[in-house]
Length: 95
Image (cartoon, rainbow, N blue to C red; front, side, top):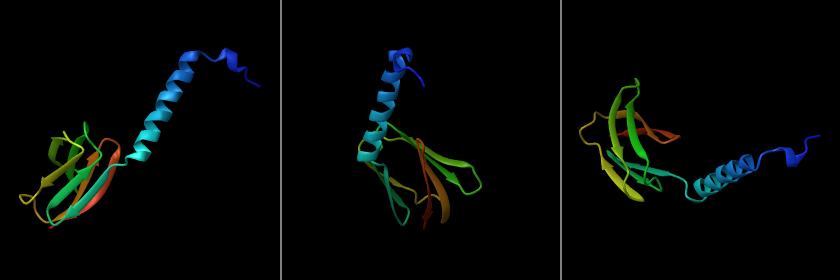
């Protein structure tokens, strides 16, 4: 049996910070909506949007500077792409 008084207070503070961060992420999950060649991102302010081709080549990178942001990808060929925002990843079809 582990005595809780032997665990440093700093560990408890770090654990609480991680839990608070997880609760915030659950309350405001990142949302990606695709329509044609347009991607709309919500709840990702301060993150970086990265778009990769299905072969793994990075084709686009942009900082997300607002709570709701729209990106137009008419210049990309029709097909499947991987969208990554922080640890959130989603496969999308752009046409």
